[in-house]
Length: 129
Image 1 (tube, rainbow, N blue to C red):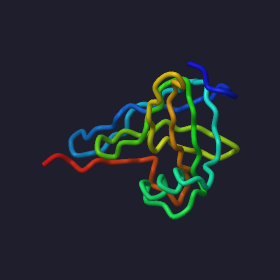
Image 2: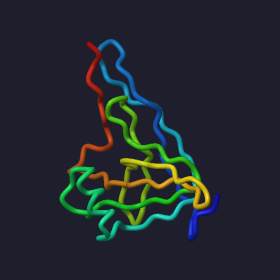
Image 3: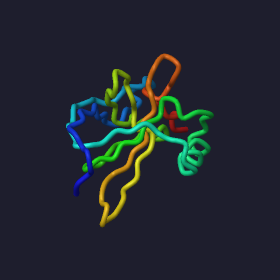
Image 4: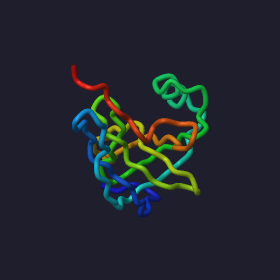
C-alpha cells in the first residue's frame, strides 16, 4: 500500500479508558509513527456532507489524513481517544476513519483540532447502569 506524498507522521495512540471504583481513568498512551499525507479540507460537496455528519458549521480546524496504516478514531461510547498528532503547529485528533480497499488501498481519517474550545480529547462514557 502506498499513499502519494506520504511522510512519517508521529501519532499518540491511546488505549481505552475505564471506570475503577467510580472514577474515570484514561487509557495509557504510546507513540506510533505512520506514513501519511495531511491536507486541509476543501469546499467540495463531499466535505460539505462531512460537515453535516460531524455537526460542525465550518471546515476550520479539520484536516484529511491519508495513511498507509490504520488510524484510531475517537469513540465516545467506549471511552477511546483518537490518535493525536501535530500538524503545522496545531494538535489534531482523528475524529473518524475509514478503510479504502484496493486498488487505492489506504486509511482515510478526518482530524479535528484540539484546543481549549474543544472537548475531543477526553471522552468519558456514561457509567453502566
